[in-house]
Length: 384
Image (cartoon, rainbow, N blue to C red; front, side, top):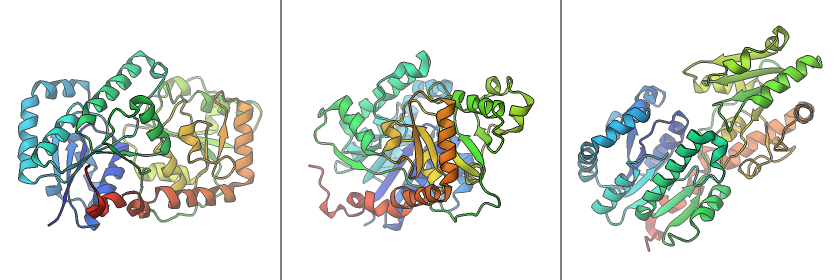
C-alpha cells in the first residue's frame, strides 16, 4: 500500500516553491502519494509546475501578511476542521513543514493523533539566530517569534532535516539534547538540473540578486560602483535584480555611475530573469552579514557563477576560497572587492567549472536518494 506524504508551507515564500515541489516529485517517483498543504498565495505559481495535479493541493491558509494571519488565528477552529477532514480522509505517513507558521504545530499534532507511527519533520532552514538585533527591533522581534513557533512544534517532531551541518550546529547550540528522541538528517537545498546555456559574450557583471534588508544591505555593492567610476575601472559593469525598494541607493548615483549599472527592480521577478542575470555575471555578490544557509548559493552554482561573500560559516561550508568563489572579510573594503573580482576575472573558467561541479555534487536533484535514503527505504526506519 502506498505511503502518503504531506508537504506543508502555510506562509508564502516564493523561494521555497522549487524546493518543496522537488521533494514531492522525488517522493512520487518512489511510489509515495504526495499532498501539499499550502498558503493561497502559491496558487499563482502553479503554472510553473505543470506536473503537480490540482487534487494534490489543499490551500488552507491565506497568510500573505500580518493582517491575514491575525484573522486566521481568530478563526482557528475553522482551520482545525478543514485540517481534520483532510488528514482523516488520507492519513499521513510523513509530514514535512517548511517556514514557521503558528499552525504548524497543529498539523504535526493531528497527524500524530491520527497515525501514531507518522514521521513528523521540519525542514529547519534557520534554527537559531544569535544576534537578532542586527535585523532591527521589528526584524529581531519576528525572528524571535519564528523561533518560538518552531519550538512549539518540537514535541510532535520525530525528525529534523537541516540544509547544512552549520544549521544543525546552531540547533544543538540552542536546544542541546532537550529532545533526545528526534533524529537528525542533513539534506542541502536541492534544485532541478537545467541545461547549461552558453553566454554570447564574456560575462562582465558583478551582480546582486535578491532581497535587500538590514542584514543584507546593498551598501558595499553601490560603494564599489562609485569606486569603479571614480577610478575609471570601466571594464566592470554591474547588475542588481531585486523586488526591494532601492530608491535610496539609486537616487545619489551620478550619470557615469548609472552607466555602469543595469537595474531590474519590480514586484514580480521570474526564475528565468534571475538565471539570465547570473549567466551573464562574472560573479555574484552575497552581502549577508549573518547566514545559516543561502538559497542563492545553489542557484548561482547551477549557472556556473562564482560567488563573492563574507567568510562566515554559513557560506564557507560550500564556498571555497579561490576555488568556486572568493571569501572576503566581514568588514568589506572597495579594494578587497576589486581584488576579488580581478582574481575571478583572471581565473573565471576554472572557478565557473568548479561552481558547476559543486552544484552537481551537492545541490542537484540527482542527490535526493543520497540525502533521503532514510525516507525512501523505511524498512530500516524506527521511531524508537
